Length: 288
Image 1 (cartoon, rainbow, N blue to C red):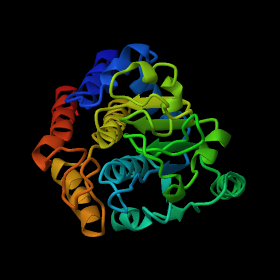
Image 2 (image 1 turned 135 degrees about the horizontal axis):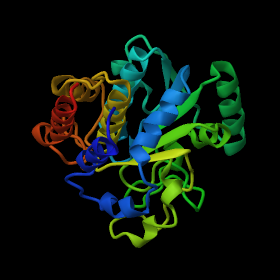
Image 3 (image 1 turned 90 degrees about the vertical axis):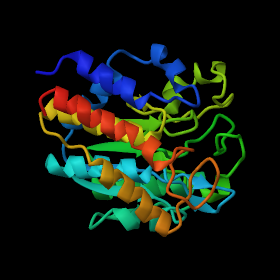
Image 4 (image 1 turned 90 degrees about the horizontal axis):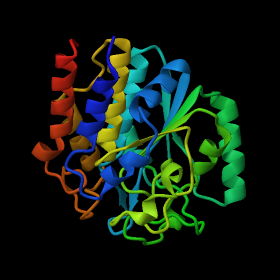
């Protein structure tokens, strides 16, 4: 049996090297938020839809943060007997298909709120998912737009996938900047944190995972699932890096600079690898 300290250590790992100030949200999060996220997923087995893909306006391409974490979660869930499909939009679907293997990638149309609501309803009816997960997916802000970390509006390039999460009772949101689906859970706190948006995402999720890098939040969820099931479900450090390289080959860019390179959120590969390395050490220490 894993003590709660194991999950707290995972939270420490995914919030290390905090550039944006996400650690400031931690005292306001409910106790045991990471373990609660893993528990909710395990309590609702079946088909799980995973949303991701964050468009970088200056590059006209999606960023490297999000899809690798999404696939890490998806692969872990399949080992545990679930099925998965990924939900993104036309701007990000090529990147997702590059690493999704045989799993379905659903293109959510970029359209009006009304049409998006209908599409979301029909999508949920078709797949009947037991749970939803969003990782590094832009969420609606209080002013009804989608904006990047610097506050620039890119609504015309982003599908309104939020409508899926408004309809489903079991969901996890993963984010690293305050403007992602799920960050509505912390919208009362985010504006008071320096470097986080004054007008944060308002879309809520049942559970929320905050991290210094959203991929790291995804790996943290996988590590938490590993502790709960007593199976090491984490990808290797090399696999994590390979996913980044594979999506850069088909257009993904580093999010901060908009450059075509195998970095994630301003972190070179060796720096980005610290999270997976540390999580593997923790799982070994926990006997996995």
